[in-house]
Length: 557
Image 1 (tube, helix red, strand yellow):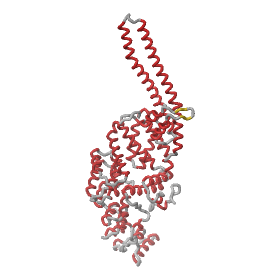
Image 2 (cartoon, rainbow, N blue to C red):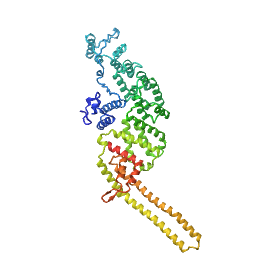
Image 3 (cartoon, rainbow, N blue to C red):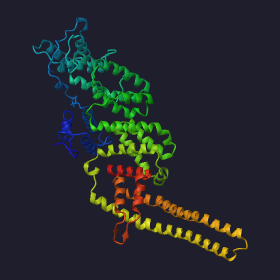
Image 4 (cartoon, rainbow, N blue to C red):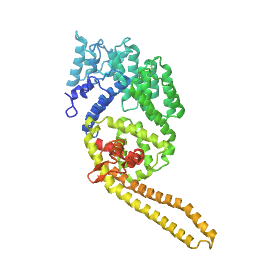
């Protein structure tokens, strides 16, 4: 059985589900966990060939899951097994007298010529596959081109041979499209065209190719077939060309179904939102029709895309806040722009920069604004997507261990931070109140001693006393509050940061547990003041960004 430790490579590409050890009914979470377990062992820089096989198998299943299509991987090493009649033959070719080559007496040429002559005189003509090993590709290409009726396999051969023969305007994808015109439901030609569009190389005149496909494949499956091509066009051409090409292609489609169209737009909007004009984005959202019964993930993705639009509209204001905001903005954009694999890698690399800037991140994110709230939603969504692909033992935590560690954190916060600092703040407050009291006693004694000599002066002193006392008490309270706040900002936030250097619990869970522990006693320590820390922790964006980065890096080790 295939496993991350000992994968069965013989299962690829024909049986990717068994290769990933997936159950009978699996979802995207199961697929990502199995995929990530494999690529942690077969890293692209060490095992490039193995990684490419794993990645190709993952993309086949990932696309099939999103579009609700049956996965049909193509075995490029033995394509004959994908057609019903692999043994189809062409009549042997008889060259004209003028076309016959001069006789070469070398043994290699004689053996080759004898093989060709034997194929002519043989009562059992060679199959196309056999002839490909003995005859020039140009000859077979022109023979197939002259046939009025071609099989799906012959269209594939024409596509394959077109890379070896100069034939202007008739390239690999053109021949596959010719085959799909004749055999619209042939699954192999369909998947071969999908694989062609998924190649790393950008096809020449990609926009024209996508338009040509839309004139042949005019059903809702057009989106499933061409999604990878649209990714390339969006990233390597102007948005105007992308928009015009997509509009022309959709004008050629005749299918009333919208399921594939919806999945396609949910996919393409992620990278497009930062590049497209707002008018097009609004138009797409208004045209997306939701089926009566749609998967839950589609509804969640639509909500997330709306947050991305909000971020784009408030992005300039967000970036005006400091250097680290540019780092966060870059991580968000590159995650969606570079694709899942490269985007995730870059997102994790930028977490390293965040965790090395503790004081800067605390000072830069000490208030909650509208644009920061949207960034938090987007950042959390990306983080959860990455964590979702981890193994179950990495994504979950022991609840008893969580309680124990949070209790130790609470005791440190009280014993080393809250209690000593509250005592210092209380002393300052008492000093202020004592000075106010002494001033009051002095003024009252002065008034009673010299009462009547200057009555107006005595009345003025008492009036000042009445007016200044509240201000003095308020000033003392604010001094006490500011002292406590400044210390907490500097100390207990750093203490929580140190806690997260080895922990990966969600900070909201930690805040909830700290609130739960408030007022309890452990040994000689009574935990007081934790409810205030818990309340501030929930809205502290500096802590949230830092702890989320630590969670990701710790979980991915």
